[in-house]
Image (cartoon, rainbow, N blue to C red):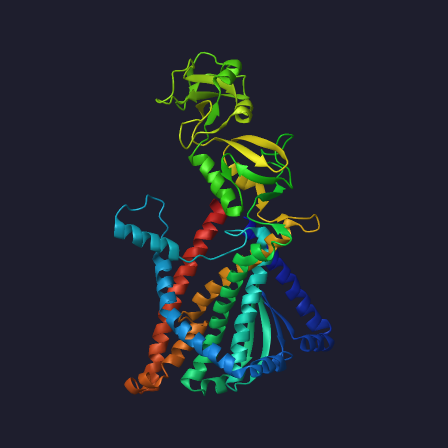
Length: 505
């Protein structure tokens, strides 16, 4: 519903802008039109546009600064774009008809590999408020804007290098999606030889690929570059806790807490944080406890069985305790301990000699396992310079209600959000850069692939086999129709799935 609310607000804003645009054109026509002409702005239905010629000289200057290097750069872009075209087309076809399975993975070798490949290559449509957090919409718009500018800058630089005049540069904002454009002299572009024309047409795709590689490199090296002001790969910091979080309280977590481990699993960064939470659910902790502690703290009552099949040996009113099972080691001496006993959970964790859930063997004491269901676990959250937090519940409670950062500031001057914001923007730019490269190279109306196919069909080898221009135009038309059809099927399928999820799930 967040997506529909956002869409409604955006449409309402465009409605207001369109109303005032018509109002000023009727009441203050000449000064208003002079204003629009001077700024390059125009308001249309669900679209804003800005056009300028002020950047023309700058693009010409940049293009002529290193002509040989740029020529080599754009030539490489042609090779990689042509290589990417069939791969991207195959990816679109697979994604258009691939349905995500909810069943078990095939156990057959070849079938399992094919299924895994199909799962990994399917494309998705990213929409804020549907499959992206609505509070990240700023990064979404900024990443699209950066990619669009870099893409069109590639076309502009390559065009100037091939003596194709630039008529202007500008922006379209469709709803909330920014799209830059470069206006070229189409007659002179089409008059170029095949190779030169391809360099101009493939330049935008190539620039997106370069941008994606560059931002990914920045993303993976951010921890190293910021290591002077942040402690990285040592721990994580709690940056936000929701008001409904069960971890809030006098003995719970607080914003600014530095978490170093969960049970026996060390937390060094964001990836290990999630790995440790997953491990705590799949491998519930067991504890090494001395017999003396058991005898002093056992609060057992007659054993009963719960509805879920678990054994209960604690009274109903004793909520701080839980039933523990003695994991007998065949190699150890007989000890006078019952198989089940009721012990205070916090005391067990605080007085244990260590964990024994990996192997039920203790160098000191004996191994005891809590009798809890598979959807609950005991989490001992270790904090730097603070007492441990003991939580009994599902690890998803932490992922849903707690936000952490792998960047722990060395001083109070810097906040962890600064580094997190940089990485999040880099992640968005990288994903969009690679995605737009794949989409744009597909032979589809409105994409660069449409013009690349037409240029490839003017190659001398093709012309010698199909000399009639009308036949080559029909071939290009058929290829683009097929590509457009698959893109339409994919977008329709993905959009319908997301709309269904937004409305009914």
